[in-house]
Length: 181
Image 1: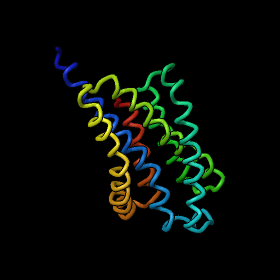
Image 2: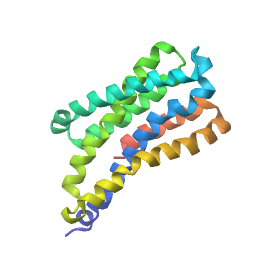
Image 3: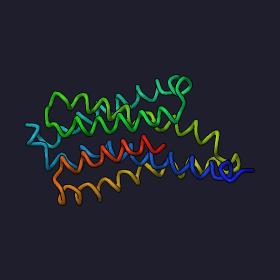
């Protein structure tokens, strides 16, 4: 077996874990920032729940549509599309226009809904049969890890460079991730 083939399970697990973390990170950004930036949108912080509701609805629809799109374009390409959708959502968010919040919520949801089905396909192909459950479990830890990273990293970045620059930096990281995979 070639060394690349031997490393495929670890590579697949690492990439799917990181994408799952990115999706959770991005979906958590509005909630973490809401108390600090809601006034700039002319809203109260608790209205972030409306944005998150739109995102979860879009995530459900994106997850349902993802299977067919993954068969057509491939799970890796769809994972890249999820990262691009997350980057675009973050870019929409920094404009502070309430009208763009709906688009940001839809893009957040698409970015959040795609990684789970694509990861399932990738891991089912590349994880050892006897360790498949372990691989799926490790990948799923990306959800709480992404939330935790948002809660720790984002406030520090906001203090360092301001909220809009911090969010744009995270959007750039999502785009670099899409290119890297």
